[in-house]
Structure formats: C-alpha cells, structure tokens
Image (cartoon, rainbow, N blue to C red; front, top):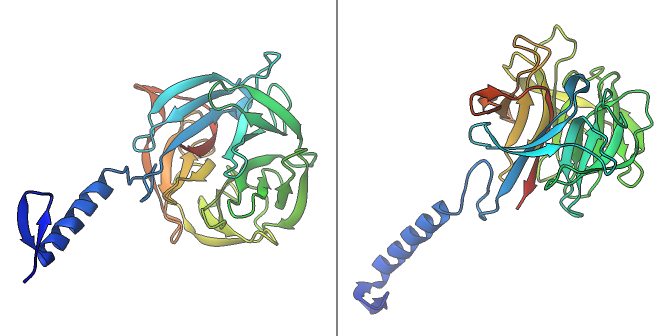
Length: 290
C-alpha cells in the first residue's frame, strides 16, 4: 500500500491518514463555539434584554444564553435629551445592522414608537409612532426579506411595520384575539413563531404565523406558568424567550427559556439576575450576531 508523509514525522497508510484528518477536523469544530449562542460556522452573538413593563425607566442588559445571568448592564435607555424609554420589543436587522426597539404603551417617553437603540450605549433614537389603535408587543424581522412584523397586545391584528417611519399597517389577523405577552420572532428561514396566553385563563401556547394573512396555528403548549414577553432565535436557530408576568410567579421576575418549535414545549434556562439579585420588569429580548 502506498505510503505518505503525515505532519512530517510519521509514515502512515493513506487510510489511517484520512481517519486522523477526520478526527482532527471534528476536534477543531468542537472549539468553534457550537452552542446556543453560536453555530457550526463558529459565529457568535450577544443576547440583549431590556426592561419596560409597568412604565419603568428601561435599562439595557446583556445576558448569558447558557444561564440567563446578566453579563453587563449597558445603561438606561435614553435619548439625546436625556429622556427615558421602556421597551417591549427589540430586534436586530441582519441586512442594515440596525438595532430596532418598540416602546411600551406606558413608556415614559414616546410610547408605542419604533426606535433605534445603540447596543453599546443604550442611546435611543426615535423613528415614529406605530399609529395604530393597539400597541405592539414584540417585533420580528424576516432575515430573507428584511420585512418587520408585529402583533398587538389589545387586538388580534397582524402588522407589517415601515422601518423608515414606524407606521404599522394591518395586513391580516391572528385569529387568536389579543396577545398576552406576545413574544414574536423569525427563524433564519423567515418562518414566524410566537407565544401568547389568550385568553388569560388559557395555558401559555406556542404558535406559528402566516406572514401573508397573519393567521396563527397552534403548535403546542409551552408548559410555562407565565407570559412570554419577548423572543428571538440564536444564530444556531434556537428559539429563546423571556418568561414572566401574568402568571403563577411574582409579576416582576423573569426567566430565560428555550422552546422546541416542533412541539411548543419550553424549558427554563435560568432566572435573569445580577449575581443573586433578580432583575425586574424586563420586556424585550434579541440577539445581535458578532
């Protein structure tokens, strides 16, 4: 059998060389950060969360996707004049690189607005009001088209949102009334998924959404005891959500969860806290790839 030189030191058969190369390739792949916050190409992402429930002055944080722990406190969400904002939605646009936010209906400044958030400083730049009767509970951006979508917390309307003006235009109906919690996210193929507790007496449920009609299709029960207020997909296409409020636990507490998009079942990753101190009133969640 033909001999070849391998790494300049050992003479090995061609077959054994191939086995060694495969083993080395697998070992190298394992060092690329293949995890919930990365993917098989070694891409990484930072997970952001922002507060805004109950009209609080919002704060921007980064989280550890493996535990839910706060890694950094970026700062108070504020505009150039020093006015404070509360967020109900955050999403990164993969084409433009803009980090968008949706303010809560009780935001101290510009409620029900589309804004831009600087992830490095928490500086907020207002774009414009949604201009709808209901308020947007979360945002989703289709990475294949760049279209922004939203659902409402007080009606069953389904919206597309003009990223230049903030105007929300109804394009359909979810068929499941208003969204309690109202988490919404698009996976890397552009498919939309979300979680709602509608009505309040119903179990928290996981849905897929038709982007043309807005119609929601039940996938399954999440198994969670509270609302899910914000959601996003990691670069490895794992659905992350932020659980809390409106259920069996203290309304101010939050947990990071992951969900199976084929069954709807969700699992708690961990409570969102700084050290042992819980972080209160978070309402928005989003990844930014690095």
